[in-house]
Length: 65
Image (cartoon, rainbow, N blue to C red):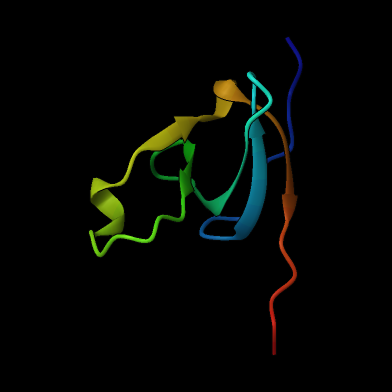
């Protein structure tokens, strides 16, 4: 079984799911998944998480100073 490197917890990332849809959000280690940033005011805990196994690729986003 292949071991994949995952981002640091709560890191800002860009990720692509297995259907090729690219999204931006954070990696949530507690949920073992990626959470998409959405423009609605709802708690992070209520947002949908994409499981690690459903993500094809990811990369860190540059953080503006």
